[in-house]
Amino acid sequence: MNGEVARNDREAGDDPSTGAPFDDGPAADGGPDIRRLDDWDADVLCDLVTDFGGPLYVLDLDRVRENYRRLAAAFPDADVYYAAKANALPRALAALADEGAGVECASAGEVLRALDAGVPAESIQYTAVNPPARDLDLVVDRWREHPELTVTVGALDTLDRLADRGYDGRCCLRVTPGVGAGHHEKVRTGGDATFGVPYDRALDALDAADGYDFDVVGVHAHAGSGISDAEDLAAHRELVGRMGDLAREAPFDLEFVDVGGGFGVPYHQDDDPLDLDAVAAATRDALGDVDATLRVEPGRYMVADAGVLLTTVNTVKEAPDTVVTGVDAGMTTLARPAMYGAYHAIRNCSADGRETVAQTVAGPICESSDTFCTDRPLPAPERGDTLAVGNAGAYGYEMASHYNSRPRPATVSIAAGRATLSRRRETLADVTRPEVPE
Ligand SMILES: Cc1ncc(COP(=O)(O)O)c(C=O)c1O
Ligand SMILES: N[C@@H](CCCC[NH3+])C(=O)O
Image 1 (cartoon, rainbow, N blue to C red):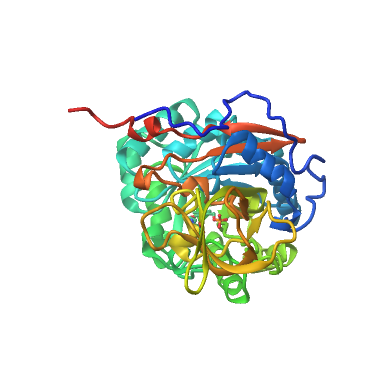
Image 2: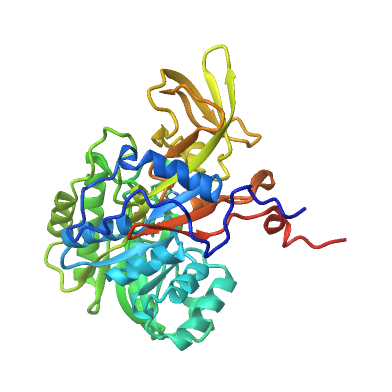
């Protein structure tokens, strides 16, 4: 069960024959507010699939840098921590660290990856949500080497479990702010008791943390992911206001007040980008006069529009009310449409001037939710066409799975006009490797 390597796959280190869709390097001022799917060079995207095989994730590291620069300029006195869960590709973590970002990690695995990518320990914050024992063991182990690490704790149990392991390092308290925001109910964490200590018990929890001899350095809350409309922004403001109040009432000085991430990006081609300056001004205003550094931890904003997913049409089928366009990527490659009904722009990079037909783009997974769109007008498909799926840089590869015994795709990263294989395509041997033979 091994050796299933796509015909054109290259090995790490091979030089691609194609150039990159963008080759100017990152704009010093952060460049345009949004990169749309139409801005990518269709011919180069087709060439990338020819060179590296498909499905293929492409991540433009120069654009990641631009997104950081724009965001950091909007929040000049804040610390910006990148939420690695959006895309933990080592080259992305290294590029962001090089720009000056810290990294917010959701697991011990992400902490290790951040350290391996050269992120300084003092710029790493581990947010422990019901942390498995193995995670705490690993993080405490690394903390002994790197005492500058910070652990964010969302339950008194976690304090206890850290203390049991001899941890007395930097600690931040996660609070459930009681307000949620985001693009889907499944990603609105702020109102959900799972993710922190209830707001009205936060002062007691700060005392408790202090009693353990931890170095309590901050408070943290996160409303949810995909803040984009007025309602979300109102929730964000409310959260920030509550966190400001908490910091002012805290029984001791805090180094920082972390108000989470969640800044949205437009997924529809004609949606407006977030007015980052307005969000930053509202954040400052709601926080008020607090003698602690503001911290934000965006994931999606940094990487979403820096990435596309490329997939190849393998089946074109006339159905009674639609055309089914079968492709080689599916919900195991990009889960967001199946999981949240999320909209992603799709472009046929091979079709020049073809008529438009309503079509359902569907993957190879045996689930009726395995569609990227339904009845969407797109150029008439032909077998072998390359389709690009936009905004795939955030929560794309990270949420990919092996369901239906599907190996995960390769990732090509782009920097300064050069496309490089950053993660090889998995083979079936990678899928079956952990299995124990009879
Ligand atoms: C604690 C925490 N911080 C940061 C983020 C990043 O969110 P986003 O990628 O929407 O900016 C998340 C995800 O929702 C999160 O749970
Ligand atoms: N996975 C979600 C974002 C959730 C972030 C984690 N709290 C998405 O794709 O939109």
